Length: 354
Image (cartoon, rainbow, N blue to C red):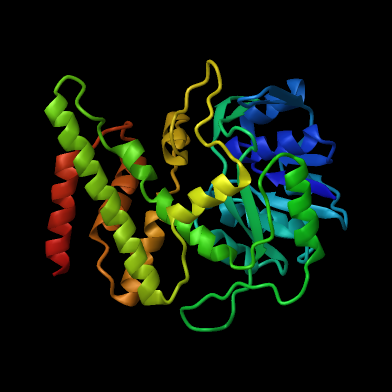
């Protein structure tokens, strides 16, 4: 089994380093300074227990790879880059190559299934961080996080996706065993998309970290009020998502289920790495790196789309989606938006819908 890590950033780099460390052949598809540094000095992964230095093969494009029958492709890029990446992969590889969507959101599997026949969905609970070119970190202690996987089966039923394994899948078994060997919690999960919808819900707050001004530092009462308002906003995002899932007939789990899965596997999500602070979610990391794009359209945007399709009001997610577009289009800085003004904007949006 050889792994093609398509997108060797925080998540992809963590997985690549751990797989290489236990002897699996790995090819990373990367770009820019990150690629150049890894070619020269390898890939470095910081974990709470140790530092891993590996030297996977590096390429800039799938067309540079001579694909083999035993290859498995792990898509690890942000969702906004998936479409173009899949087109490049489709031109370079056979259509039945196993493609695993190791990504947040639920749109990647749909995109992959349009071009490839063996598509797998992966629940990603890995607190990874891109530090600088050639260096990533993972703050999970014990195991490196959760990477549960199931086969993606989009049935021809209106507004409903069914996910199950009809018969044993040797690719799934080999893949989860390899990831376990590399130090992740990983198991075959037939109803994998229910887990991915749970993770989608938890990621709806990513834009809050990136867009909303932080709590007042000097006024304790104001800080308390800010925290309460943040909780209210977060609950609104989640409630809208669950209402959309119910209207669409989508089976979903919750953050409690994800927490229980981490506890079951023995993953310490609160572990620290000396000298390396946690920065925040993927949206904030993208803004800190000034990538010029963020993935909110595939997170909050998914809820807004479902709301329109099934006549469910989603003002909180709609406003956060609008804010994300303004950030990108106007190149606004982190924490540009005032929380109270944002909450008023959501109320105004609700009145417009009424």
